[in-house]
Image (cartoon, rainbow, N blue to C red; front, side):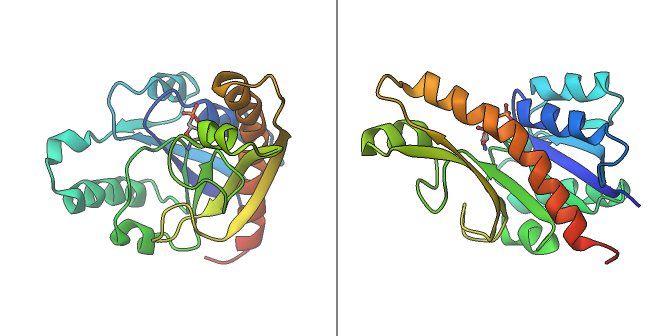
Length: 195
Ligand code: GRF
């Protein structure tokens, strides 16, 4: 049985697209049953619909400062679609402990650095400023501490002397698109026959 997966996005959704493409393989152990965005204008929503995947926007602005109510609405849609694994893919909202705990061990995030190096934002600029020789991306389980959960998989790229933020981020993004499906497969296989 394929694991039922939701992808949470906020924007262009290129990692979402990579997951959709991987999930077309009949051998892939997961299927994408839902794409959810906190922004109604996220480009990824149209792409998901074009692929026949239900795509729902739950605009956080409609909930004002009430993060709990926004997350409760998200959780309801996840449960309605009988989701088993949640993949954060460029989802630009910090989650509260409610949603993190509800999906403990079953929620992945992709982060554009070799964690534990460079958690948070502006990872490519910070890697360049630090003068590191290698950079990359990480898929990890989501825990309450941001970008700090158990690592499922990483991919490395060299940092070249000629790099700027654009060239480096493009090199990392190409690796992200290969890494996320690999990590989702690892987690799906790991969950095995668990319910
Ligand atoms: C990616 O770099 C991802 O690592 C980060 O946000 C970006 C999302 O890009 N968390 P996309 O929406 O998947 O194209």
